[in-house]
Image (cartoon, rainbow, N blue to C red; front, side, top):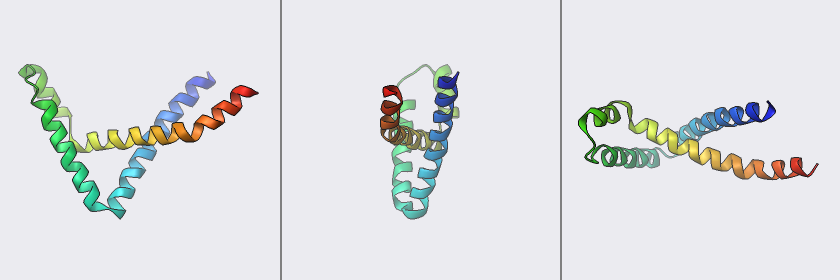
Length: 96
């Protein structure tokens, strides 16, 4: 039960940390965030132009937005940061 609570809290915390990271970049370096939004727009175009059947591709176009892609990117970065920070704690916990 403890593992389940820790893993869910890790997911929630990484989502919050990802949103905070994106906000920090937006505040301190708006040019960088604008450039990253352009990359996300290009990536969306790459995903939706794969020649997928139209009945599936329309859902990608409707549901996938640049902001979501950018938030996913920052969430992945937050998860990597959390993994690096928490790894020594997990090692110490397993030793005892």
